Image (cartoon, rainbow, N blue to C red):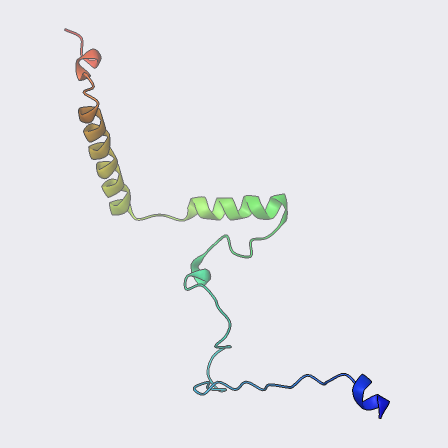
Length: 97
């Protein structure tokens, strides 16, 4: 009779099976993985000085989009001119009389 009161309760087991989970599909539906991890060069980068240097050199060799670079330069120049106009900067100091 004493063992009935001193015995600990067992935890209830809960077996969760999702309703729309396809076992034959790809991967685990509960694993959260960012969308662009497969395109990142810094993810799981090799350790050590040699690995970091090789990774940096590979990033330097990768060519970017030239149109993007030109567009960025134009936008940056326009923003600089707008800021200079707002603070009433005098451009005549750069041009001798």
